[in-house]
Length: 284
Picture (cartoon, one colour):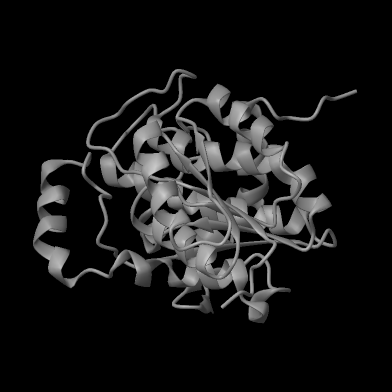
């Protein structure tokens, strides 16, 4: 398969699990992949492994997505690429305790939502110049358990491990829907995918009960390759070339929760995210 020959695909969280599997699949289709990871050793190792099955050498980029400054630096470097055809916002985590990033935000909300929001926003000029292009964001069915209070998006009140994760996954869908609306007519599509419950390192920093549950369920979980299938489909298939604003499960467009279909909440979250990331347009 060489359907992605000549395409450039950026994948965050690409050193293991779903991100690495998606990058590998796209590289096998002929794409040049840019792997974004937090650790230099692991990212270089993933690039070397993928390079052994790819016609084009992968590029490794290092950034801690918990830092908005590092996200900005990453976007500046990626902006120097000749083109970006696909951006896959895959990096994400769940934590067992409330942590604060260097920017003063709750860690899970920052990594899972603010980082992809900021990275995508800063790369929009490159994506639109490369159109047709695609943005794929990895979300989760956990969004249906969210209780997202937009007056307290990073849970300064009532923090809970699972709530913080579910809220961030709801934010991913709201972001995708509003992004698709704003990109209408540009040739850039935006979709999100629930990969299923996948056998990866996800949850290793979660609370003990969740870690135990994951260990017990591990033999029954999907492989990273199967988990990445819908993501790769949204990134590469001609079947969805004109589809945008969708939530996909097993390659099928599905209806997310009612909260995820709230257009007013999507617009408000966008405005809040602009202020939190410093991307709000100047007012005259």
